Image 1 (cartoon, rainbow, N blue to C red):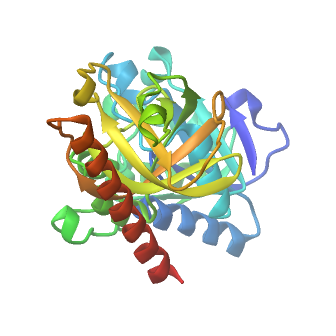
Image 2: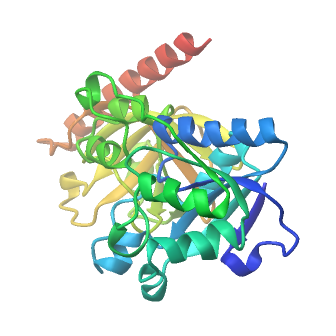
Length: 319
């Protein structure tokens, strides 16, 4: 998959293409339907498919300080889009100047002059241009002038976790923030992932016999509610069952919120300085402060046992 940053990176000899535009944070199941349709139309027409997205998130430029928690960094979104068969990803730097482009100016500058759109695939709620004044109806009107077609795809509706709401990044962020990682996974089509570099912490886990990878998460990461979770720790291409702790470590009067993952039954791991991924499968329990270290150790043993059971059950379902 080709990756471009800014309109100037698009090859000058780029021909017609099928385009879809959006933040696509998380590349959830609703996004997958829209992107998949764009890929399908591109293959039918024998031309490339292009996803257009933005960095930073538009809300941070329009309303500084309002950057939403991110479900996936751009490199992760690119991986997921490549898996869907996308031919090219265009990341547009979202600046104050860019935010002032009218809907028509955006269409001409990006879709017509640079990407030579033949088809534009979007969800029904797509908005674009200055103050989000453009919608799919206006996009289609412009298509009559600039020789492109607009294909509008209905969004999927979520299951029990979302109460019947359409799949959305906003809903997914709420579920993650509430600790409902199973509900978030239902929308994403996979477990929610947190990434970062392993840094040295207080090393209390090592002292207690449960050494953890203390993950310095990427900026604006959507982190689940404080508590203990079952999931996986991926490092150097190896995916390991893990019991994951999120919180301030109240047992030792901590104040800084951390994400720590214990690779179950793994001995002698040295992960310091590595970029790792932590996938959240299921909620185990909330954050607690115990009466003694002995009580804490008993709880950790139960957490590890329960995490192992949840992971094994999930793997059995997928077998």
